[in-house]
Length: 108
Image 1 (cartoon, helix red, strand yellow):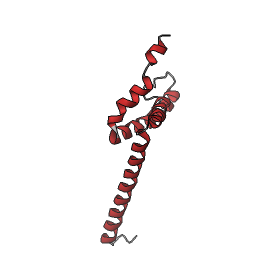
Image 2 (tube, one colour):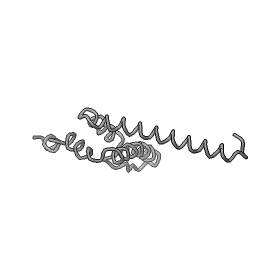
Image 3 (tube, rainbow, N blue to C red):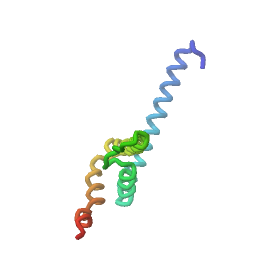
Image 4 (cartoon, rainbow, N blue to C red):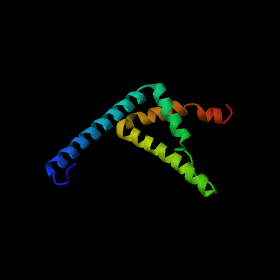
């Protein structure tokens, strides 16, 4: 790209911004589709659990804790997607995946 072609640079930047917007909208639409079904919500909930979003990442070994925090960060990115795209489905997902758990945990 010609460093003196300011019009060309502006046009390239606008095209890149449009491309980024389309990719983000596509990702969000795909995610809404996944979260629209009970099976999809179960998958997402499982991923959040596996990433340690609902638990502490403290560990006395610094390297292990750093690993857990990196794992948790990927889960928080997923949580951000939930909040941006379909926050109204979050309580449904939690209820579906924890319903009756307190009875199982208590041995009932």
